[in-house]
Image 1: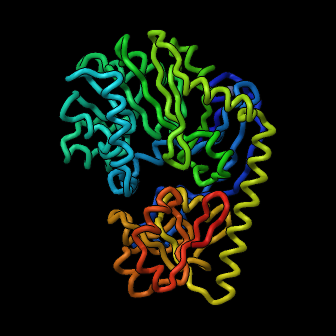
Image 2 (image 1 turned 30 degrees about the horizontal axis):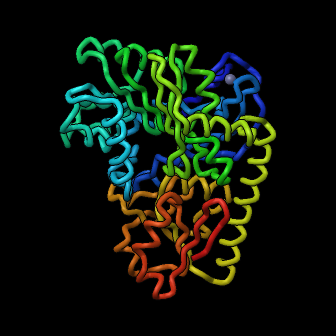
Image 3 (image 1 turned 90 degrees about the vertical axis):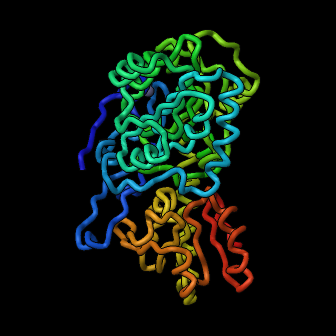
Amino acid sequence: MKIIHNKTCRMCDSTKFKVVIDIGRHPLVNSLVPKDRLDRKDPTHRLVVKQCQKCNLVQLVDIIDAEEIYKKVDYLYFSSDMPGLDKYFAPYAEEVRDRFLKKNDLVVEIGSNDGIMLNLFKDTQRILGVDPSANVAIRALKRGIPTIPLFFTELLAEKIVREWGPAKAIIGNNCIAHLNDVRDLIRGVKTLLAKDGVFVIECNYWGGMVKNTNYSLIYHDHYSYFSLQGWQTFAPQYGFHVFDAVVTPAQGGSLRMFLSTDGRPETERLKALQREEEVTDLNGYKTSLRYRQNVLQAAKKLRQILRDLKRQGKKIAGYGAAAKGLTILKCSGIGRETLDYFVDDSPAKQGWYTPVDHIPIISRDEAERRLPDYFTILAPNYADVIIAKEARYRERGGKFIVPKGEVKIV
Ligand SMILES: [Zn+2]
């Protein structure tokens, strides 16, 4: 694996960091293993979350080169395979369209995956996706979403604006955390965005992670863990201003921000969130230390619960072979000694194995023949959806373990 050792903070030039949490060696949780490669040793790399002492950005300093993560043909995360995600994006796209767009305006999405959101603009606006993973771009193209299979950079932005003209909206959902060079990103956005355009970001939220003791987001793909305050300091250096922000339920609490360069007035909900970050001292190192303690406790508790059940002779399987779930398991030290298999509804993952532990991933139909006493839900965002559709399994005595903050058994 190609490791990049950053010498300075991603958002400022500070070289001083403090450790938030060190969770040991983890594999690339989005790189599942096919059967014919089970005899090889999967690479792992240490995961240490640090906090910049100057601008407070929580981040990974030593990172795995994104080329290695997204350029692999076995990068198997397809947005459209995620249950309920289309329903999440519908009102989001509607809001962007109603507030900021006219017919035939250009909408560019960075990290557009298989086009799940751009598809919602297809009939009213011109659309263009940018996503470095060829696998997902192939799918986007198939459904008629023009997609450039490259990383979004300032250089690419120059090329796009020359051919397509300026964009009225640039959207980046769950992608800026994956970028090492956020300065190049924002320069690129400035190049491509119309003077009266809007840059909309949705990213993981440090506030949500702290509030819910959520550690499932800590993996090699996520280089940064953002707060509103961080962006309010960073964006003005490039002529941008955050004029609106809200926390959404995605990923257990995501931060959605609206930025522009034309001096729009700040919304009330932005001011409220800003106050909340101040009151809770979200960006202080003391908060980071408390987070560490809570995470270690939650991971330990999950390990105890699963080991006790195993000791009682119970059969346990995983539900949802998602990156977040694999992170939870690794943090808790749970592997194939505890889990018999994973169920995953994404056909792209079925027949594959989890990295390092090589736990098989099967379809729900296949699991029907050997149902466990307990399913651990390892796609915590979808716990409600999964439990609701598994009424029959529960009627027959099946139980679910939900490791979402406090571990719950239902
Ligand atoms: Zn910094």
